[in-house]
Amino acid sequence: MRNIRLTSPVEGELIPLSEVKDAVFASGAMGRGAAVRNPMGEVRAPFDGEITVFFETKHAIGLKSTDGVELLIHVGMDTVKLNGEHFEAHAAQGDKVKKGQLLLSFDPAAILEAGYDTTTPVVVTNAAEFADITVELGGGSVTSHGAAEATGPAAAKVQQRAAADHAYDDLPDEQRVAKLIAKYVGGMDNVRNAEHCATRLRLIVSDKSKIDEKAIENIDGVKGQFFAAAQYQIILGTGFVDKVYAEFVKGTTFSGVSIIPVLVATGLFMGLRGAAQSLGMEFSDNLLRMSRILTDTAFAFLPALVCWSTTKRFGGTPVIGIVLGLMLVSPELPNAYAIAGGTAQPIPMDILGIEVPVVGYQGSVLPALVLGIFAAKLQKKLKTIVPDVIDLIVTPFLTLFISMLLGLLIVGPIMARSAHRRPDHAYARARDLRRGLRVPLAAVWHRRLRCRRSAAGHRRLRRAPCL
Image (cartoon, rainbow, N blue to C red; front, side):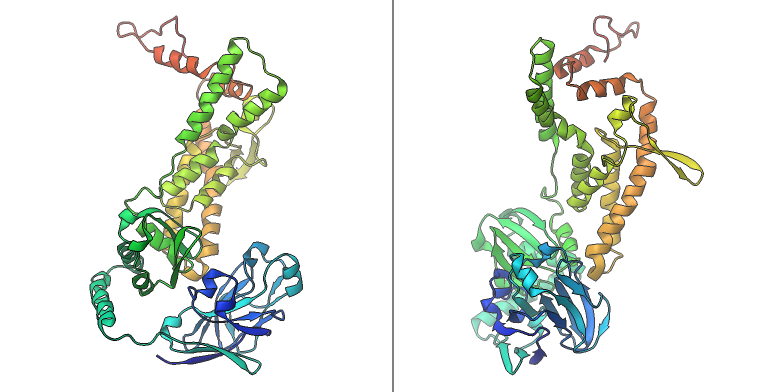
């Protein structure tokens, strides 16, 4: 392996990574390199190459040199929370850059005033491919040394482990990495839960002693690993982490979340309130208002809950499901209950000469269910097409945009039209629920059970009219 020397892309005080007040960078989990304390406010290209990642929040840049060095420049700690404020981009993802070219400018004083550390790590993320890595700045330098070549019994053990891992070489990368991670975390029985963020697979394990951290670090595709916030976090990179997670949780219950307990709890309280009111109990306006907040919120935002749960269950990103569900009940749309009560009208939209009524879908299940399934399938398909470097931005945008159009202009109106063919008393009953559920839920279901046709005459029982 060769040694490399890099010019710091940021002016300031050069320090070792171990002095950075962030466990991820200080431990070397993201790679080897150095950091710049009190940066001057400009990021310039340290070599000729290409911008592989330019985060939308502008706080971090990924570069790749013409000779294969992959570099991450991360301005400040937790500055992603600034959402681009105090940063100005002078280049874009995919641009070819020359050494010394201005890539980013930022306001260190404003960032400090906002409460964030401006120390800027400069990290070679593919450090395993190099021996010594030296970062130079103003006559000074910081060098991180590569691991010495192992010999003896330890080396033999590593070689045996590598030979065993070759059995997975014919699998696609995401399957290979997922199976090797499962193997070296002590088996799936040792994993209590799994989730992921933009770059890391996050596991909650039962027994830390069963994890072979060195073996996981040596998996081709893993960029680092560490424990933080009671989670075992494995760094895989943007885009790739989604694919590995999908393979890792196959056949598990990690992705399944039920909304039934929430609906049962709020529905039960709604029934008790209705029963109390039917028995003549009176509530003060404030108490009644608070009880409606408790019981009606879940049903008012039912599409968001259904779409979230469905999207997650079918392998999509849960937050996309939440946003899609909230779009169905957006305050910009006419409220479904107001339309049922005659106090609002659908928004007519002309699509290719066909008038489509656009409404909100408060309390609806089927549009959110269909949309959640579609969004999950679409997102998984897009991930096979969209390059990993732009997957974090392009895939969610296209998934939300296409699914929103489908939901508001096609799926929703079709299902709403089907619902309008049902007796109008269904909408009246929905209004009753909003106004305090004057008919107790227990009585509703009791009558439904008694509402059946007799075998002889197929007549409804007069004593129990169907609601």
